[in-house]
Image 1 (cartoon, rainbow, N blue to C red):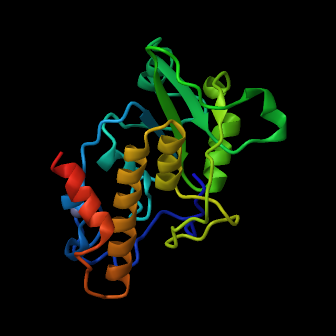
Image 2: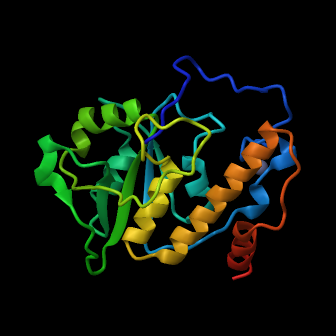
Length: 228
Ligand SMILES: [Zn+2]
């Protein structure tokens, strides 16, 4: 969500002949897998994934799965929602929200986050380009009963790998970091932001054939969380 992809055709990565890590999809020299964290958040994420989005190295939804335990991914279909998603949405122990910017024609669905006793908040993020996310939001009947929550954005996106369609739009991982902060999990937000920053640095280093900086504050922070 909040991403614009320059690729309307099936994705062919630039430099797809380079030796890629099958997990993080970065070239093996700049693989970020050693920085994964199993962070336990009181918040859960569901990524609803547009089918065109899955295999792009620049998709940052994967970063949420790498850091925040319990993150689940579902394939989006306009007419045939997957059974696991429907079951999860009707789980009385969960408190699901769709994360999406506010709009005039669904004002009555917009809410602020308020914790509910004994129910785990679930933020559903529509993971795709901005255009795909809007389509998923508008055309999924099975999501239309859910409250909508807008991520509170401070500062510009630091995601430079894809151009934002509109100034101030965030990529999927940044949206999730914002939602963690909004739900009061500032540590979780910090972990995900740091992992995202490592991803950005490594991606850039690969693109510009530059050496990696091993001594960044993001890496120190991640190591701290890895060591408990
Ligand atoms: Zn890797």
